[in-house]
Amino acid sequence: MRIEEHPILDFKRGREIYFYYNGKKIKAYEGETIAAALYAAGIKTLSKSLRLHRPRGFFCGIGKCSSCLMKVDGIPNVRTCITMVREGMVVEDNDMELPDKEYEGCELRKKAVDVVVVGGGPAGMNAAIEASKYARTLLIDENPRLGGQLIKQTHKFFGSRRQRAGTRGIEIAKELEREVMERGVEVLLNTSVIGYYKRSHHFLAAADKINRIVYEIEAKKIIFATGAQENMLVFEGNDLPGVYGAGGVQTLMNVYGVKPGNVGLIIGAGNVGLILAYQLLQAGVGVACIVEAMPKIGGYFVHAAKIRRCGIPIYTRHSIKRAYGDGKVEGAIIGELDENWNFVEGSEKDIKCDFICLAVGLTPSIRLIAQTGAEISFINEAGGWVALHNEYMETTKEGIYVAGDLANIEEASTAMIEGKIAGLHAAHSIKPIDDFERKIKEYMEELEIFRQGYFGERPKKAKEKILEGYYEKMGERRSS
Amino acid sequence: MKRWEREGVAEIEDIRLPTKEQLQKGVAIIECIQEIPCNPCVDACPFNAISMENINALPIVDFEKCVGCGKCIEVCPGLAIFVVKAKGEKATVMLPYEFIPLPKEGQMVKAINREGKEICEAVVKKVRKGKTPVVTIELPAEYAMEARHIKVKAEE
Image (cartoon, rainbow over all chains, first blue to last red; front, side):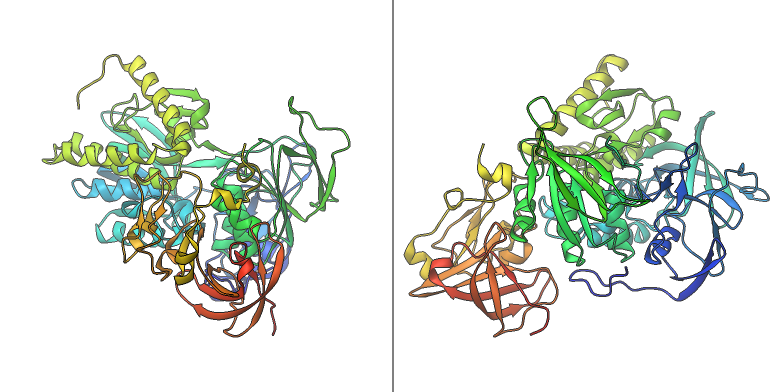
């Protein structure tokens, strides 16, 4: 299951170690997650559903969906997809005991800074870099490393030179991480923000799971860049181990060098689905086909052309009817859709595959931002519930900002610019910056240019609605 | 609806083509036929032969200025640029290739068209390693505008 050779990536595996899974000794490498190590050992069922005890595998692979919860060293409900494996670790099936052990005997630390950024992806890292030029900045991420979803993007980015076009996402992640460190941004990794509350200032509660420290963080401004999570799709068998979010497969394959299976079926021909198909081929994994419910391919033509050249069919106006298999995916039935989105009788095809990737869009991860009391609104074009915000990315709660996919599902390129805008404005509202007007204008123009084309129509519409909602709530346009 | 919107396969009419004379010296064919916000090819060209009205516009190659160096091939995020040279019976196609194993110079490979079908045998003339490897293949001139990918046998 491990990828030994790859055209783009070089997997530098850590020291060989051993851990225990339900009493069985399993080989792993330092620096990989428990879920990746189990997967590489051929263990695909990580948990069971609560009532019917149906087997579940990982789904999102980025710590958001709870489908990989296991008991680790006696602590239940550990997200094994973002927890690193350690020598001698004891991993067991979750038994749903209350997690009374987790924070017993933890150290409490207090911190006070100007700006806190929650989430170290493209938006969050840029927000922290920008803010740190003018203010004391803290960046928190619950993953073991910075980069967000850039760390699995092996394709070269679009856009212009300013957004590092032509550079692979994995390289952009490294460049940004270096800049964060060079700027002296304080970084807390493996640390989950678990709550927000307000006194005279904004406060966050956070927990470092590895070093067992609970933080109470006071901040003048908070920028949330918590990203998004993969959407589920309703079909029979959608909970079989082997039905994965497309992003989860990218993580497993491109970050940890573990193959998701032998032949995959991809649902959704947006950019995520198309790029994933190409990445699977690069890793030496087969792709049966891509099905897309819409009459047109949703992603960029150039991405579609790349995989068509490799002989992968794309079936538009098709969808998945059901996945089948005994405890794991062994195949799927797909079919053509008519104008009323019903399956055309007799159009079914049996696709032999051992995993299925859902690439049917993302939903902003709003659970934290919602705690702040910032106004949340359902905006279809933005991907669902989002925090209303102004052109400076500030929400209806003063001093609370959003950026990136949390603020509207879009590209990493635009997330980076949004992060800069939020960081700059947050710092400016603490202490005025001389050149603020010129700088912010430059970033806003960059965003606008990016959104001018056909693919900018949806995000542009989303942002219009978000702004409209914001000013409806806040009254007249405030001058900065 | 165009075929490429539905199937991801461009037809020859969708692509801006050079004249026969221009093709003889070898020029970049950019199969970027949908407006997306992207312009690294413009910056990559040492001869200023690629222009775009704005970042969302389609790139236009000035086939007179283009010398077919292929610098644009490896920066294109869409892997949509090919340098084609057709003179007499033979043609060469320079194409991006991000798979392993990389072919060796002199090796026979299968030339593949935009739909993933094998169209003819081709011989590898050059392999330029870089961020994205660029492989030059030689094949009969009639396939110059069709061959856009190769199939490499693992062991030769």
